[in-house]
Amino acid sequence: MIQDSALVPLTSSKKLTAIRKQAQQFKTPIDSKVFEASPSKPTSLLKESQDAIDAYINKIMATYSPGQKNKLFSIRYGEPEKIKQMSLLAIFHHFQIMMPKKFTSIETLNYFGLEPNNEIITKPSQFKAHRQKRHQPPL
Image 1: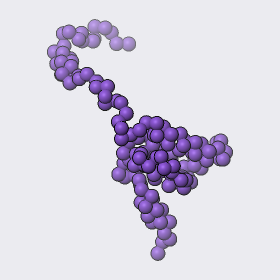
Image 2: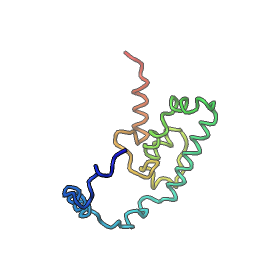
Image 3: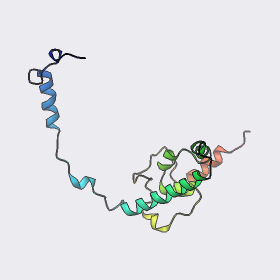
Image 4: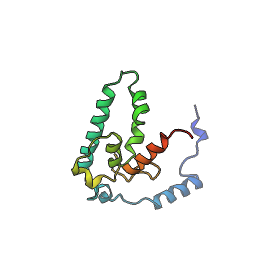
């Protein structure tokens, strides 16, 4: 256990005082408008799409044995976290289910309501090309 005499009091340390002053300079009040839902990302539609995707994933996983459901799902469809990084359009296409028309306003967003990563396949045409490339027999 560290003895109290080995610690430097906050008031007597010049370095700690300078760090504290510098940190206080950058503190700004949090603007509550930043955290409100923006009109381009309707939260109710996003919640509905998340529920639909979760329900479909759970429905698929329920068909697998309890000890192997995550592994078998990952082999067939990919890891759920990576799937959730794709755009909603790509997720529905990936599972080969029809996306309801009400989700067209948010189809470019991913499961979490953010713009998908560029590294991840986000459009059905990219997915189809990627799948064909992946399944081509060697020459």
